[in-house]
Length: 539
Image 1 (cartoon, rainbow, N blue to C red):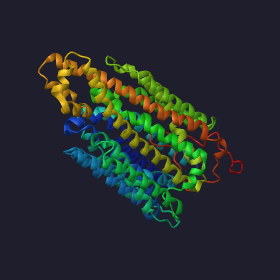
Image 2 (cartoon, helix red, strand yellow):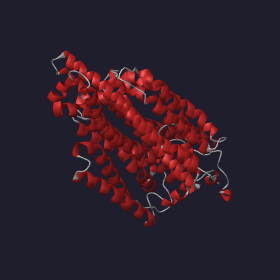
Image 3 (tube, rainbow, N blue to C red):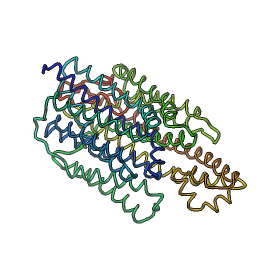
Image 4 (cartoon, helix red, strand yellow):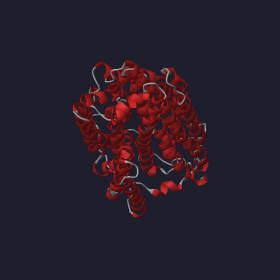
């Protein structure tokens, strides 16, 4: 097999796998209401459909890269494809929420393995100008997956059912595995490396305890022994993780990276972008479908102004990184995200979906400006030999941001939807009667998004309308509150982008390195070295 043919086969396999794993971050959102009805899932179950995937993706990302370096990237990549494809099959066959969420967690493991080894495979197959072309195609595939994810998810869910958003991964995965085994050359890291098991376990369990506590806090009580124990355990384990990383000889995460202010700033921006607008996608989907009554495909179409604009702007922003300082693109982009969230936080009971349109447009501009800078900036503030860990850390911060953002916003959502809907009901003639008869069942239905079913069981038409109108009012008030919280989180990214991302921290690579750098991340294509990159001697 000629070398030229082999490298393009490598790109095809890697792009196919990456498209699948990133599509499963966005494609699932518009299917959540259908999943809820089909599996009789609670609101907490819906959170875990997204969070189980994000958590394991975040937890395994850095470790999977080391495993690939040690045992062979092609072999580990193929294993990741198999794990992802089989778990996708189980997701589609799920008969209850627990089965689905466990399968989603395993799917995240497969995704992490593929994502962690994908860039190294491309870098090992391409050199010179072809490498730039390959990374450009790879970045475009990443941006495209995010841009059309909601539309594909909506079309599949509306046309043939939500299970097929997982089933379609199976034949694609089989083809990708065949290409990987037959066409991709094996590569390993010649350096002697070891897996940081203590770091991996403490980090993973800490994240799980934190997210589990946030998701279950409203149901079990924030002062209960279980929730307090989980939160304390999460804190203790995270401290243990950092202590281990400080003293171990081959850490999962090099804490020396955090001595670079620009790296800290870029990491915080990655986290806040994910914890704000990307975490809000779940609640925007529920608002568009459950409250406004649109189907999955119609919901996916309405997300297009945001997702397509983010993709288009990222194309140009990636090229601006060679002319405009990263701090400006990050700060202005996150400011646009903040403004967009505030614009979307103006809904009321009689709103149509167009109330979200100005915010969608402004957020799309902001996401498109930020994503390529995060990708290129994370590896431009470190020496080439550390770019793999820097890129992995950047993507880990994104996934942790999504998981914790969904959990925190979900805790607020469950509390506020009950309070706001009950308050609106109390202002109606039939409200007191509905609350008296509904009792705990109504409060549970409000928190679980099952108000339509409760309303259908109310025999008095006027009382039924009173409940639904109050729910619309309560949902609008709640979504506005979530937007305000997300805007505050995004504004932290604005400050860190402007203040911490300093020109003097950027370095110019002195050689090709191992090619672990990332031209893109979950959310958009990347660009070249930032304009603020300067020789290391000037740093």
